[in-house]
Image (cartoon, one colour):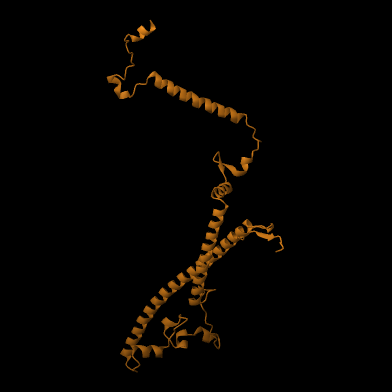
Length: 275
């Protein structure tokens, strides 16, 4: 009889969809959709309650070895940089790390040599390395106080007032007149006035050129200091890499001095008799 009952066509009962006048409210949730959503909600709720219970029963004085490689940041446990570095080196392997450090050491040595050569070249072209910004002084001794008060530097050096402050290429009036007038002597006052105006114009041009030269010189000194600082940094980096390379090698050793002031730690190796 059961087989005949199944053979009879039955009415299929279907859940209705969203009515037309309620279509603006979106999809009409069915019972099966509610069951899935309810199960997911209760699953998350149970998980949160279990975590709260575990946290409430945890001993704050409990110790585990993972604390050596992690620290709390913003309420979360994160690996320290040292632990990340060790993990990275373990994944790459000791041979790969050794090759990478050898390449780094070669690159640092090359950059250090380039900076040293550039420093030597700059030192050969620049003067007054120790005091590049200090102004030179010229001391002149006079007979008495009255002569000191009436002292005229331009007449003393036999040059123009515009050239008194120059420490180099301070030509005298005779040589300047010979350069402007082409070596011809003239007693005409107008020619002398014109020559003085030409001299003043030359002085203005020379002053501009001197300022430009001073800026270029200051820039060279800044580059020199930067190169020296970088060469020193490269030397420290080379010392650290070389120390790491030696420590990673064979042989029994012990540390005799900790690293300080940017210098690597110092080690002493045990003497070994060579066969």
